[in-house]
Length: 229
Image (tube, rainbow, N blue to C red):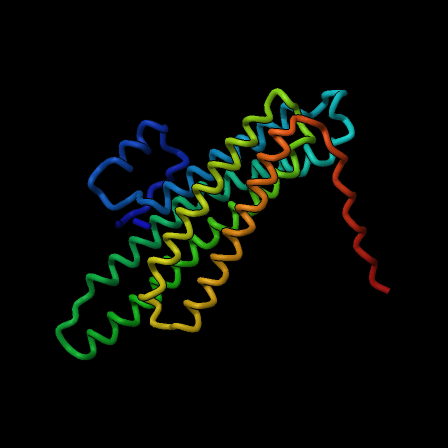
């Protein structure tokens, strides 16, 4: 999460983004950094799919290359957008914290604004965490079904995605007390735990197939959607 106006981080050079991250300004912060790290992982997934497409040795995995490559590209775009949204969410939260509280009416308005801002500040990193889960699902699908010369890039992608997932989870958790809604907070804690477990499972599976170094069976074709009667 992070301060006032939210720039489009995806339009910055890498040098410029890191300079902003290293500054004393609160934007960008850890939530944006986690989303950008996951976007890099998504780029690697798309790259491995692209390096595997149209290669005769991997032709039986074409459907996986198409699906995972498309997912990687889409997730990279989504995650860069989430980096911007995280900065904006923190800006709104910081602004709510600075509202006046001299009177009972001002205190009530400030508390309501903080609660509303905390909801967004928790939901944005939750979406980053969900994107990280989708990303390791794509990396796991490609492992053992893609160009073996690029297999280590899938392992790197899974590591980056896991680190980003834990970073996003931290940003969800830090906002829960400000919700002042223990039932909702418990539900979010449970969701975080479930997603982190899924990320870990798919990440470990990705690296296991990479280490094995062998091709595996193609993915089963998805079940056709039944037509309405």
